[in-house]
Image 1 (cartoon, rainbow, N blue to C red):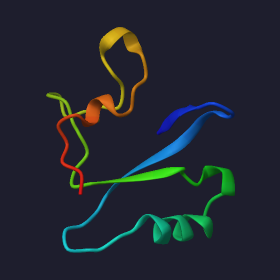
Image 2: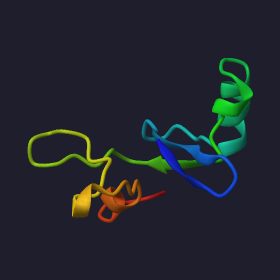
Image 3: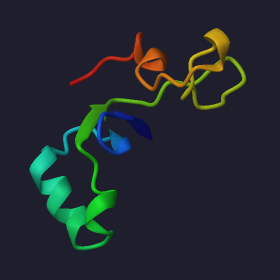
Length: 82
């Protein structure tokens, strides 16, 4: 998902759902991605989640409802971060 950036307009933000009991850290994920995708695709930040937020219809909530303004963190208000 893209988040606003002052220089590049948008930069990637990765929401990663981990399997329970499986340790993961941001640096090892960046190394993993560094071998598989272009350098500018590697996210500036990685947010680890127990699950992705879904709406009543089961669709992934990735945009704010107010005025159609993109706000990737709005949908995560009720999600438990680890």
